[in-house]
Image 1 (tube, rainbow, N blue to C red):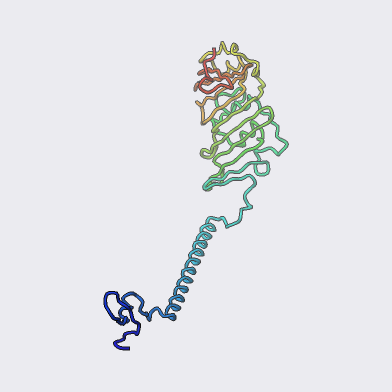
Image 2: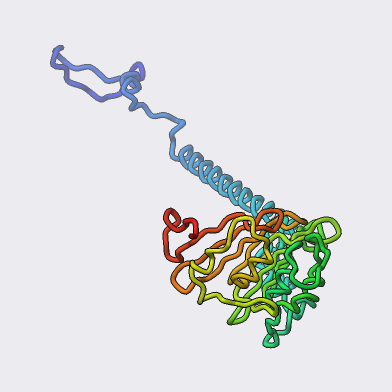
Length: 300
């Protein structure tokens, strides 16, 4: 070849004759052979790309394994092995961060009657004695502070219950005792206060009395015509008998007043509230199926 020109000839429409296309011409249009793109070089590059891909896959697998290891360490440190459930928790227990609840039964509490042996023998007279100042019999002098055992001594063993614990304490800070039969019920919630407990809420329904009449279901509004604001609590019981439902909350001594609900012969009820002196504070008539906006009016 002369002056490194090829023997390829190209015709030109602008010039007569012919001229040779040089390697420089081929390079100008990108067709010159590039030694860096030889088959052996391309094979080498392909191998390098494969190695890089394999290295990336290895790094990804290592990352996943590291994350799983961290998760396992955290769960084990929390005392909850992966894929396992604790078999040490008593049946019926529940736990959440900082709080655990345990259902009480005769198997784990002396306050609960054995299954099938519960009998609700408590009367209105005994249940009302748990409210300081409203006793109609023996006075407990508890000032609202009662242990679960003291309640059992008054009402007997409960049919069921629940204890709520804080993870930082070995004694429950809330205790619920339920007394339930087909005819009546008593629900008590105790809240820990110092070395003892106070009644946080108390409700009971359909109990009988040894001293006062039970006229619920046969009462009419006319029976409450002589019930006036300021009437003493015991005078109310002597006039219309015991209520069908009693509810009080926040007991911590004297001053907390219960709400009495009397069931009339029609679809109405009469609600009576008391002041801190255990005297009638107000009287309301309520229709059982009425809406809240139209359910209450002053009894005549």
